[in-house]
Length: 265
Image 1 (cartoon, rainbow, N blue to C red):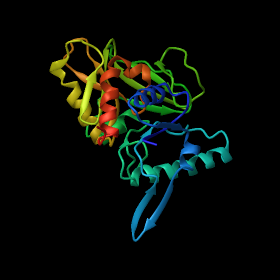
Image 2 (cartoon, rainbow, N blue to C red):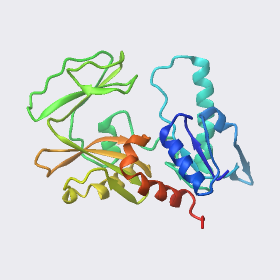
Image 3 (cartoon, rainbow, N blue to C red):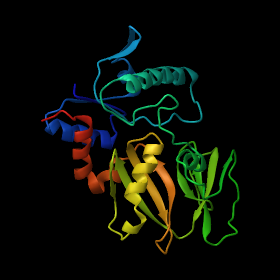
């Protein structure tokens, strides 16, 4: 096996990576969390951690739901997750978004403000967490409220219908703003549009931002004001979908091969 992708079989990005790597002569396996955890043995030999097998890994594991639906299933899942955490943190092979001692998902938080603080950014917005949906209106015409259900992760304008029963996260953002997504892999970054935004240096900002958040692969979505002279971090996505990276897929997949299979000829 040349590469393990930990995720779901129906994950379109995992499938696209596997298909391309297979054409390049690599053996790729996609396993879910429970199956992947059973693949490894972690030992401490003479004071050193040993992982067997030691192979490149892509982690496509989203954070568990905030609301527990079944205690036994949750316990089994979290035990397997802790094994993979140890494996990915301790192995010598390349790991995309390698876990750190504090988190398996870098320093990205459910709170956008906390994420900004962890990235050494000055929080530039308001954010409210609530059990029930709040009726929020903005006093500033240049700002508007967005609502996210933390059970379904669906996001919409605060006055629109949303699927889910909470808890909720409300965040104030620039009204009538445009958005630019920047896909980051290690020290490389690509914008997904051709809009003239070079003066904002979004690629370099995104690389620096993810590095501060202990991530080497992900998407930074920037909110751009209508004058296109100011950008604000809107969202960090550590588990991009294939649809999100498709505009630059040919560049990204070859870069993934270079990062994960550095000794290939």
